Length: 67
Image (cartoon, rainbow, N blue to C red; front, side, top):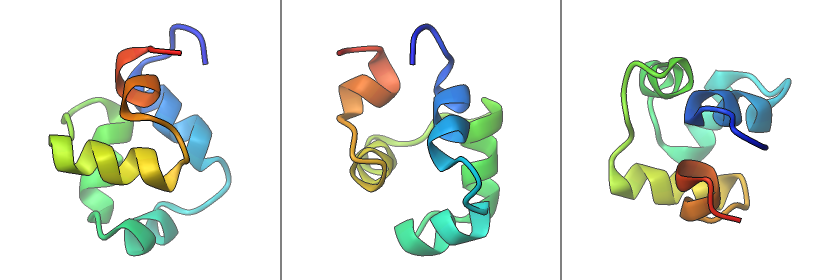
């Protein structure tokens, strides 16, 4: 995913899946997910773990550009 921002990574991983679907499956509100994708809010550590698990990535890959 190169040097994309966290929000860009989240949007790319979500792809064509609607935010409402991801929110329902992760327990994260749609407004929070939107804010994370737009870069206006940072998720808590617990939410980072939830999103990483959902997208089958490590927290480091998704949020800290680790490989």
